[in-house]
Length: 141
Picture 1 (cartoon, rainbow, N blue to C red):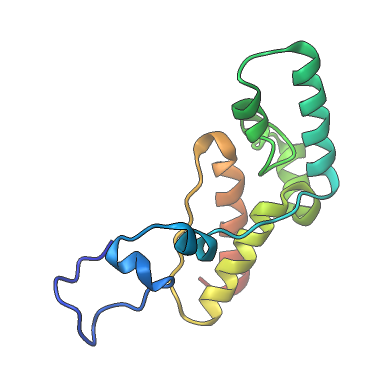
Picture 2 (picture 1 turned 120 degrees about the vertical axis):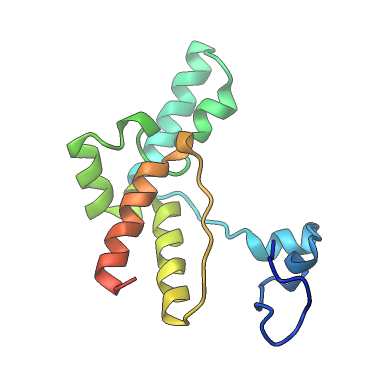
């Protein structure tokens, strides 16, 4: 989305370029989405929860399990001191997707580019916000 009504030298460069025209198709989605493989504690917790949900037959399996794809703990637990410290110190293994987001954000800052990050409150928003704030302090942004 842009507030510029006419393209010209002041019009911001957008990547992928088709987004400037509001076209979202398979090709644009491939450029926007970056796949991250779950590893470490995040993978172990995801598998544990998948087995537990299947055994119990509880609720909406995919939406509940989706909470564990970003963080190794349920979104409501990320502010507990032990969980917060673990995510902060071991981001690569406890929140690999968030580690990729923070790394990309730091890269954009180095290139003097803007970066937009979307994250739902139910999928670890507070943990991601905390990690981005830490990166901001470390990298002066």
